[in-house]
Length: 298
Image 1 (cartoon, rainbow, N blue to C red):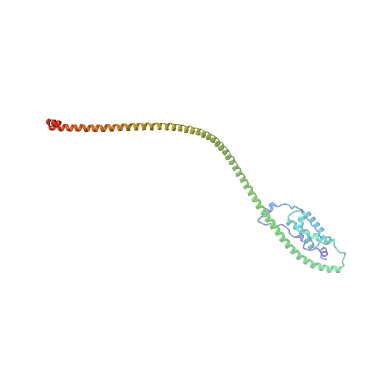
Image 2: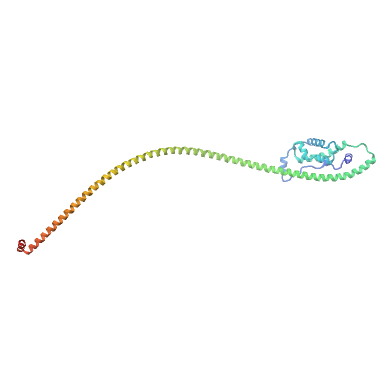
């Protein structure tokens, strides 16, 4: 019944006349303006999607506000379109809602009605208009809150995108610096590898020379040991010969010493005898010749 009245006496306050401009965060409005782009879908695409959803879900019944809002949402239209900005799609839905409801009401108009009934209907219509105005104000406030929330979410997403882009640029610069550092390190490593190869070659050459020197030294040591052993054998023979000669000389010296000792004893004995004869002769001379003769005679 209300659809009939609304179609005959349109509402003064039309939801399509609401101000659906973007509510951008002033702090990031320049970023939003710089990054602004055209919607992925056109208004006609949204209207076609709404019409298809109503045709599929209404079952031919008149489209009321409740039925429209039950069947049509930003999510369902976005799914039908295959993508798009939810906030923009929601604004388009609210813009086209009155037109779809009025078009459905026009298709379901009753036949001509008597004037008395129309008078009562007009009075009822005026009351319905007041109620509709209140509902429109509530819808407008809810839509404003939804749009503000969507815009805030979009602004936050844009800000996060810018932060991520800045972080990505920093990461790229850091990666570039790391690539340069890595290149320098690789060059250093290559230089060190060349030095290591040269050092290994020098070590191998030195090891070969050392092996040659060790072999020659070993040969010299073996010859030296052989010479020492030969000299040791010769020294042992000479030592034994010298010891034998020393023993022979010692025995000879011992025998000579014994002979000298015997000669010394004989000499001492002879000296004692000569001494005694001298003393005796001296005594004799001191006593005189007679005394000497008497002693000899006696």
